[in-house]
Length: 83
Length: 402
Image (cartoon, rainbow over all chains, first blue to last red; front, side, top):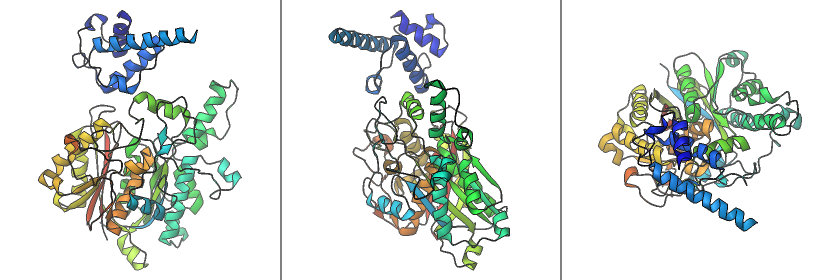
């Protein structure tokens, strides 16, 4: 999920290469306000809604990528059902 | 230095439209949180707020006067009218010139601003209503109070987010104590239920999707509120000389800045403000029997505030009662500290400590006596009212039973 890493790096204004799938938010110095900014940027990037309950357990880039993938898949399924 | 008496109280919020109604709701521990009605919230993640339900400018203002005054400033005037009437002030030109007005507001006339900006941004019109600026400005409450009563002394407004009204009452208290004013009307008002404002709060992810449960393990965040509260302050000797009813005293005020983070609270900053208030009132921590907590119901605030209270009070923290009335009247931002100052004074005056409503599960990190769900009869001499704003600007009032 290159795009998720890119959103995190752009939002936090840190070099892309410092954001790896293994990075956790604490290592990257991401605090609660940084996190809500990243969620906002991800919602815009992928045109999804990230519910508050889903984000409580997210602590790492990997968690974030998995969560975003799940929401994108749900959105695609919903669009297909709509057709 | 003069002792400062509170001789008038006025309040309008979700709990009631007069101080007596608010007092009764607090006594019953009855939360006034419910579905938001004044704004369409179908596109917003949270649905609940603590509104002045069914509010209309009538019978308080005729239509033409109301055209000039945003809802937030209307609340300030309504509260000031009640406080002034109750204090039984006999106005003279000299007194009007020596009376101060200090109000707090965090966001000003949001509904007027939202309506105006929607015209240009969304509806594509090329003009905004000419009263948008005077209705939106955060000092409109203070200005309209001055016009309502012909008060010509120092008047200003303080904007320190959720601490605004505490800073306002604190400044007014110091002005009266030090002889800079012979009377003061102090408090705050807020009406933040505009669509844009609600969207901005939604984005911060600190608003509860259900209700507000301060200090409870299952708390999910704050709930927005609205309203206004105004206090009449005067020197104790003057109040006694004219035979005024004295509701209590403001005896100390303390401020601090966290110098830490724009939204995360700090234990040390909060503790320094409480210590400063105790020092200003010249009392020991052990004298305090009740704290009206900032108690927003967010994960971060309640843990930090508990730790700060423990840092200031040591073992005495287990002997004092702490409650968050935001569980009932919501978080009214720039008006919060004024409503809570009234709640604290009523607790001292009437001997009934208001509860923390909606409390369901103990949290080991918030292990104080939070007066869960039911008001408690107790005679307390000293109380603190805590306010810890976003931006790390803290203000604490020390109040005394008279």
